[in-house]
Length: 440
Image (cartoon, rainbow, N blue to C red):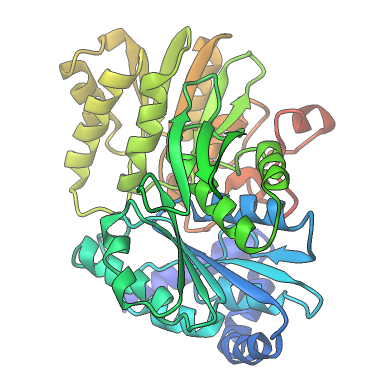
């Protein structure tokens, strides 16, 4: 009990310092009323087609791409940022208006039982399931349990609904015989409605794909970094076809959209180096995609900045050793941040990285100071860690002064617009990809 009181007091103190106390109390008071209000409101919106975007990774980027395609042709709304939980989902539903033809809503799960509540509340007309991986394996027994949880979204779809699914994922493929709704598949599978024939993305080149759909081949250029985004593009094309959008229009909208904030987002720094910000999704199963990008990239010098990864049962020391070993295979220089930085550094040296190229840093401020001294034009930097470590302060510290130096923070948002950051966006800094006004 004392620990619970201490935790509550600490949170209230932080809220008061940020001027958020009244808003925090208001949100807690209104939360019990959100779900019933959203449930009723959703049933009244019978002319709006609700599209659920689900999967272990890639939901937000898929939602943004799909919104970019649909909103050019129909009144469309999307959920903001990563609002996909028991608070964010009803808030997203309540923002939909009767004149919206489509609502693209992100839906996520983090523990058993989540999907039952959320799928019933959303009552999707089209459900898009991207992938199933071991994300949240720390709260589920195994990947099979995660798959069973996500399958509940598809099982709620009736005869007039459509499931848009990744046929290459064996867990998703196993769900299909039990479904009564229409099924549209995407992937490399020969039976896919939207089939991937080829995908390439070797930095500095962005993702390009060759796709077969409607009996013809299409070449698609994107601004995304990494071939792991191919399924996102395929899924968006499949839904666009369902919504009667011509393929050239869909391709043009996809090509115009930049990567979403902190999802392998390239940012050019004042010194001319490029940083790949991947500081939101820190799940263990997302590391391979980012590491593949670095492994295949062409750059004068490759630098990685790691703190930790999440959503795994691996012990802290095991994770630290793993990060050190990976850094030695990926980079010319490695910077480790946080409590286990020394252990990761020793693992990187043992794996063959020169000791002079390995730098353990106690906090983000030390890492920013180091980078300010060593970065140069032609460098490619990967910034990778869980959102709770808020490594975005390293990037921001290279652009302007940052006051906050907390080791961890429980705010589920990026630092870019945090009132405690001390960082101010100016007209000059806006050129370095200032964040959107909302959705972070």
